[in-house]
Image (cartoon, rainbow, N blue to C red):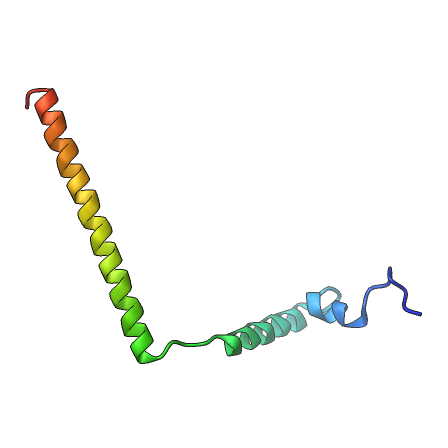
Length: 82
């Protein structure tokens, strides 16, 4: 029967408690490399597509902000007699 309150053997290594600083650093680097292996890199066409979408979206937001700023500027100058 398993003791629920007792920590699992692998948890000591997994969280790095009880390990020397060098062993913890080595464990950290190993975990980082394991996570980097899981990363799915976009293809060239996906990257170009994503970049175009971002540029179009940012341009649209800039145009919207500029038009609102221009409108408020004209309104303030009209109200205060500029």
